Each structure stands twice: as C-alpha cells, then as structure tokens.
Image 1 (cartoon, chains in turn brown, blue):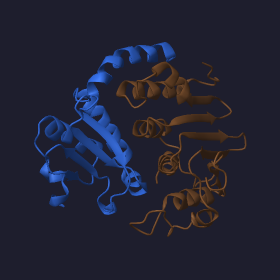
Image 2 (cartoon, helix red, strand yellow; image 1 turned 30 degrees about the horizontal axis):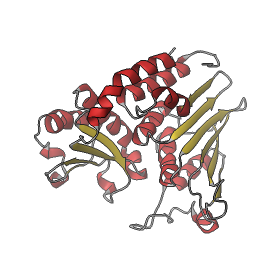
Image 3 (cartoon, helix red, strand yellow; image 1 turned 90 degrees about the vertical axis):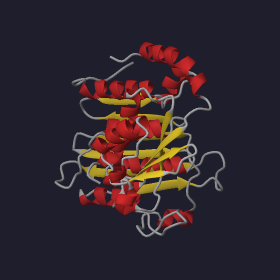
Length: 189
Length: 121
C-alpha cells in the first residue's frame, strides 16, 4: 500500500464485514510526531482463537482461500516506523450487547519509512458510498486543527435520502476538504 | 463553509427521485475493493465510475457497488458489469481513464470495450 489512507480503506472493510452499524475512525497526531490510528466498530467481534491468529498473513476468515494480508500489511507499515499495532475485540458470544473490535496502530511520522497519509477524504467518501447504511464518526486531530465528520448528524437532515447519493458524497467531500484546507483553525459547526 | 442547510437543499432535490429509483437500476457496476483491489488502485477506479456515471446523467439507471476479492488478484483492479438479461462483462487491470471510456462506450453506448475485458488478456 502506497498510502496509509489505503490501509484504512482496507481495514474498514473488516468492520463492515463484521456487521458493524457504527465505525469510528480516529487519527491523532501529537506534538512529538507520533500518529495514532484507531478504528473501532460495534461489529460481531472476534473470538480469542481468531484474535490470536488475525495478524498472521496466512490466516483469513475466508473459506475460499487461505491468506488474508490486510492487517499484516498495516502492522508492517506501523512497525517499520518503530510503532506497533494492537487489536482488542469482544465477540458477540461473550457480550451480546457490548461487542466489537478496536484496532490501534501507532506510527512515528518522523521515520523515513512513514507512508504518507494520502487522500483520506477519498477513502472516507468511497467507504460511505459503498455502505451508506453505516454510521461513521471521523476525527483527525493535529496541533493545527481538528477535522470532524459524524454521519449520524447528516442523516438527521437527510431523512430517507441515502448518504450514498452522489450529491451527498460530493457535499461530504467538500465538507472535509474545507476543514483540511482551513489554516490553523479548530472547526466548529 | 459547507452548511447543513445546503445538505437539506440536496435532500429536497433528491426526495422525488428516490421514489422513481426503487425497482430500477437495470445495470450494475461492481468494483472489487478487497486488499488486492485497493493495493492495485481500485479506489480511483471506483471514484471515476461514480463521477462519470453521474456526469453522464445515468444515476437512475446504473448503480455502482463494491465487492470483495473474486479470486483473480493478478488482474486487479477488476470491475464487473451486470445487465439484466445479458452475460456479465469482466474488465481487468482498470484505471480511472479506462473507467471513463467504459462508461462512455459500454454503459452509455451499449458497446463492450473488448480490449479491456478479461478475455483479451
């Protein structure tokens, strides 16, 4: 993967496959140059057995083939910068009410091996377009600004109109781009 | 700044169209968005299909959806076109530029772009 935003696009598909109705994607950059990515969902979660093996590139939940590279690739990207990847998960059989998976990856952005974040706005738009029925909460905090998107708020305005409509996706694209382009400001709606 | 009022205006415009759309969508464009597809460049391909189909005014007739890995990773980005009563067309090694041509010639014009299909590789 050439951009971290492509890993995020890929990993988010796991949350979708897990049947999540809510996915929170958080990027947090601290003053020392460490970036923390958290993808948290309320999907079915993983059993301890699956959780133990999920970072093995030769493990996959698929039944048609025996490899699954997504998490391994992200872990590699994090570790190459000196960071790490951890996953916490509660399977629905363990807690039928509060289940889900939280993936956390840290990156040293000062490392020469840090992949550029890339077009995160496009990643979000593609993800929402593909699964507009899910609610997404996106937060990207740096020392200069906080970029936010909460699709539940948009849904209140849209009622029956899908988040996946072209005009809505374009609105979201501009909404996020404007926040990224705003210099040194914290966005407040 | 983008406002929620603007979003409300979009909703008003879309409201009537949504009713018409139910039950239509005779043509389906499916883009492979698994790890293999994404790594090979599926994200801009999907974006190009969505944009070109909208530009061509075909959103009533065509839906663009995403799918996982279909098992021909070496040919990614892979795009399948399903049309009622016709055989599935599989486009391989797609790019945003190729997507624009597929929309213009196949989706809009009804003529398959043979040179991009899997049979031609």
